[in-house]
Image 1 (cartoon, chains in turn blue, brown):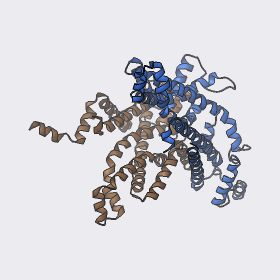
Image 2 (cartoon, each protein chain N blue to C red):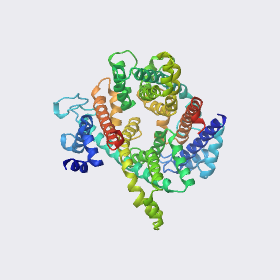
Image 3 (cartoon, rainbow over the protein chains, first blue to last red):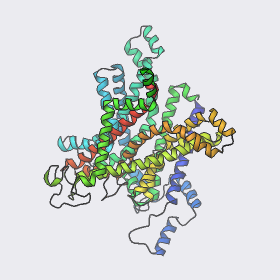
Image 4 (spheres, chains in turn purple, brown):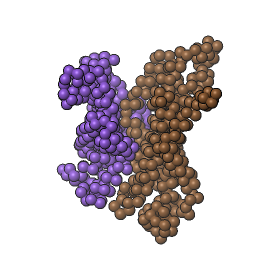
Length: 307
Length: 290
């Protein structure tokens, strides 16, 4: 198990390194810079700015400096949002984004696993067929359509919840965003759960458990469910990536002051350190969750860790 | 006799066609897709309004028959029917081109890796694994942030540059299976250079299964394009894309529901049709299913 964990951890660092290097290279090799504005800066001003931010150094030196600073948790200054460092900007939005993403993940797992078990147990009955239709619909609908539609129904017409915006400490502003973010993931998890539980329920060890006279409930919860959860657990990594990407849209739809807008605004302004910092943070987050999901899989299933 | 004739006629492709058109859901999805594509192609001729034309008499007019604004207008008095169809046009164009780009990269990368020596192959596929584990819309966002915003070319290349990973995996697996086959060995023994083996013997043989997968890339690309345009990183005003129309609609939905519902309906129907057809095509060409 330990060697499995170490191998996976090594893989993460490699991937993160490739991600940082690739993003850094792409950003620096492209034409155009953060100081290209409508009004051209005079040459000395431009030179001073570039020297201040170290952009006049050779590419390799810049790369080395960036990596060195990154190792100390320093993402550098934002080029456009004056007086803020990228780290400060991210720290400003991250609590809200993390709360949004985490709640959505938990809700998605609860809903998805619950619906999947229901569908598998009452296979081919009304509940199963209804869930199949609903999950197909939810997977097909993009979140930038679902979000506005939910707001239209529950905020504009029914006045149950606010349309958009955020006030500190008011959870009602987060209800619709969390649901929008969770629904497609829940739908996908429900499908996975249903398929894998149905397969396990047909397995010989479940039949022999039944043959030994164990009750249906006990067979389901103690024997069938743990192995059936495996595909669900291994999907959690990709699901997080999905939630993170989705949160860009959801934060924009519901005007939430999370980190998503920094990535979008940074991309529009060509604020390199900001975009790079966001990619590193989100990339690291995705990788760490993938790692945890891998470990959980290895723990659940010895075949995985001995591969 | 007639049985034998029937057996001759039922090849892979004719079987597939029968299965596709025999399924009412698939057939209607195909019909709806053709209808939407036709509307999008004919968009300039279907209405007397241009997509940039400002009709000051009808600002934010609701859908109706007045003045030929069937699906209403936006805040600036631009006809929503025409703008939505132009959006469909642009989305289809970008997604088809991006799919082609990703197809090209994926097939070349996968085929080269499949034929290459063990170590090169491992390195190339490890690179694919690494890219796989990243939230790759971020990479697209980086790419679009580098060039002039709203450039169709940049958008296409950026989307294509990240969509090729699965294609590469499929092609590489197929090539791996092919490379030990007799006809490849014969070609090699006859002294055919590797590049020619790749182009003449390997690629034609892997195209079939990959082409089916490619039909499922198209809706994904439409989704990504709309996603970026929704965030303001893709197609820019005054050009219309389904993504930026939905964005405007979401801003205006409290007073003008149609501005959201019209482009959203088109996007959802388009995605649903493409996904249904892609899935059906995959099933139809897979004999194990029957």
